[in-house]
Image 1 (cartoon, rainbow, N blue to C red):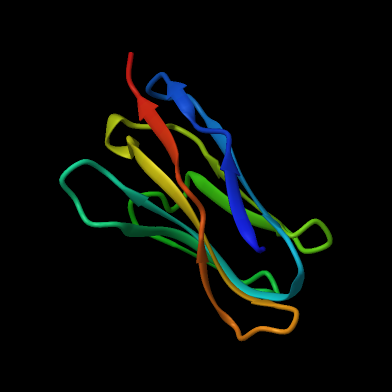
Image 2: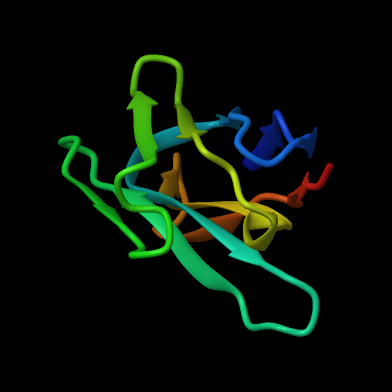
Length: 120
């Protein structure tokens, strides 16, 4: 049973930083693209940052310049460092992976989400 588990969310003051982690576990053959999405109350889920298996990255304009996405392929883990946090960064952050388990087809997987609240 493949699953993605996020960690690292919580309450952060404006201007602060946080680091989210996403660990993929189970019988995994390969992981292709991975990414972080977020969904604020009353808004659609949006891409925050993505990273390919070779390490190529892309960022939403809202976080560009103050965020870094990375992954450790040996650990099947992805990270998101966000600095200079703003109240508008408040959202549930979801981990995503384009992943193929052993003996099964390649498809999209999602984590359960981790709440990030930026408030003083």
